[in-house]
Length: 84
Image (cartoon, rainbow, N blue to C red):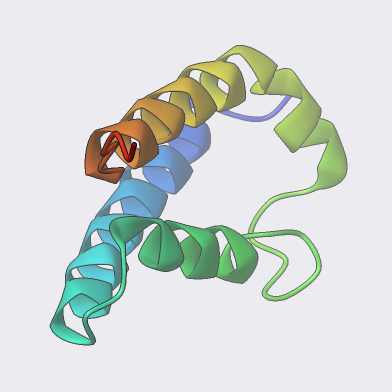
Protein backbone atom coordinates (compact mmCIF):
# COMPACT_ATOMS: atom_id res chain seq x y z
CA UNK A 1 0.00 0.00 0.00
CA UNK A 2 1.27 3.44 -0.89
CA UNK A 3 1.56 5.89 2.05
CA UNK A 4 -1.36 8.29 2.16
CA UNK A 5 0.74 11.42 2.52
CA UNK A 6 2.63 10.59 -0.69
CA UNK A 7 -0.66 10.18 -2.57
CA UNK A 8 -1.82 13.57 -1.28
CA UNK A 9 1.53 15.11 -2.21
CA UNK A 10 1.26 13.68 -5.71
CA UNK A 11 -2.32 14.90 -6.15
CA UNK A 12 -1.53 18.36 -4.86
CA UNK A 13 1.58 18.79 -6.97
CA UNK A 14 -0.13 17.46 -10.09
CA UNK A 15 -3.05 19.88 -9.60
CA UNK A 16 -0.65 22.78 -9.13
CA UNK A 17 1.36 21.91 -12.24
CA UNK A 18 -1.84 21.41 -14.26
CA UNK A 19 -3.07 24.84 -13.16
CA UNK A 20 0.22 26.50 -14.09
CA UNK A 21 0.40 24.77 -17.47
CA UNK A 22 -3.23 25.55 -18.30
CA UNK A 23 -2.63 29.24 -17.57
CA UNK A 24 0.45 29.05 -19.78
CA UNK A 25 -1.68 27.53 -22.53
CA UNK A 26 -4.04 30.51 -22.38
CA UNK A 27 -1.07 32.83 -22.87
CA UNK A 28 -0.35 30.90 -26.08
CA UNK A 29 -4.01 31.37 -27.09
CA UNK A 30 -4.75 27.66 -26.67
CA UNK A 31 -7.61 26.08 -24.71
CA UNK A 32 -7.05 25.08 -21.08
CA UNK A 33 -7.26 21.41 -22.04
CA UNK A 34 -3.84 21.65 -23.71
CA UNK A 35 -2.23 22.48 -20.37
CA UNK A 36 -4.08 19.64 -18.67
CA UNK A 37 -2.95 17.15 -21.31
CA UNK A 38 0.69 18.25 -21.02
CA UNK A 39 0.55 18.01 -17.21
CA UNK A 40 -1.00 14.55 -17.44
CA UNK A 41 1.71 13.43 -19.81
CA UNK A 42 4.45 14.77 -17.53
CA UNK A 43 3.06 13.02 -14.45
CA UNK A 44 2.41 9.72 -16.23
CA UNK A 45 4.42 6.61 -15.38
CA UNK A 46 6.05 6.76 -18.81
CA UNK A 47 7.81 10.13 -18.50
CA UNK A 48 9.06 11.00 -15.00
CA UNK A 49 7.92 7.87 -13.10
CA UNK A 50 6.29 9.86 -10.29
CA UNK A 51 3.54 7.26 -9.94
CA UNK A 52 3.19 3.61 -10.94
CA UNK A 53 0.43 1.95 -12.95
CA UNK A 54 -0.91 0.25 -9.81
CA UNK A 55 -1.23 3.58 -8.04
CA UNK A 56 -3.07 5.06 -11.03
CA UNK A 57 -5.53 2.15 -10.94
CA UNK A 58 -6.18 2.84 -7.26
CA UNK A 59 -7.16 6.44 -8.11
CA UNK A 60 -9.79 5.41 -10.65
CA UNK A 61 -12.66 7.34 -9.01
CA UNK A 62 -10.58 10.54 -9.00
CA UNK A 63 -9.79 10.01 -12.69
CA UNK A 64 -13.49 9.68 -13.45
CA UNK A 65 -14.38 12.87 -11.58
CA UNK A 66 -11.56 14.89 -13.15
CA UNK A 67 -12.38 13.72 -16.66
CA UNK A 68 -16.02 14.68 -16.09
CA UNK A 69 -15.01 18.17 -14.98
CA UNK A 70 -12.69 18.57 -17.97
CA UNK A 71 -15.53 17.50 -20.26
CA UNK A 72 -17.80 20.15 -18.75
CA UNK A 73 -15.03 22.71 -19.21
CA UNK A 74 -14.65 21.82 -22.87
CA UNK A 75 -18.41 22.04 -23.35
CA UNK A 76 -18.46 25.46 -21.73
CA UNK A 77 -15.88 26.78 -24.19
CA UNK A 78 -17.75 25.46 -27.20
CA UNK A 79 -19.91 28.02 -28.98
CA UNK A 80 -23.02 26.55 -30.52
CA UNK A 81 -24.44 28.74 -33.24
CA UNK A 82 -27.50 27.79 -35.25
CA UNK A 83 -26.96 28.23 -38.95
CA UNK A 84 -29.92 28.10 -41.22
